[in-house]
Image 1 (cartoon, rainbow, N blue to C red):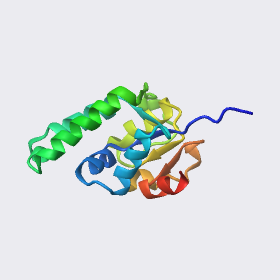
Image 2 (image 1 turned 90 degrees about the vertical axis):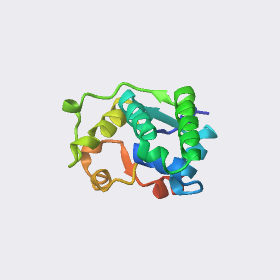
Image 3 (image 1 turned 180 degrees about the vertical axis):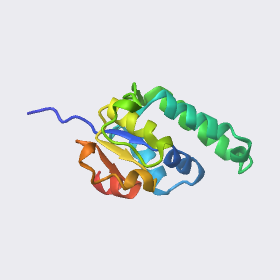
Image 4 (image 1 turned 120 degrees about the vertical axis):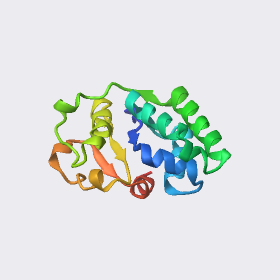
Length: 148
């Protein structure tokens, strides 16, 4: 019987932040499913740096002390169990976001040969039917949950 490989997934930093701030939301559910080893979560150094930067901002820390704790727990989980990948150089991407600041997510997904990029960002979701994506699918957290 052929071995079924796990899906490889990149989760947008904004969804990771949403999962930290609000439990039991779709982004949080995606993280909880990942923690059950249902799929492989891919991260790049840039994704991790952005997440760490946001979590350390005073504005974020002022929300509530539990957010800092949950953020640090998520970062520790990502460092321990997510698969670090080298992003594809942005110049080599077969497709680009209309917001160049989002291209690092595409670069991470293509560099890690991801099956899915999970995001809430319209600048990325609008690309979901573009043939330049090849086998990569860009979906919302709700769509991704419905696939599992």
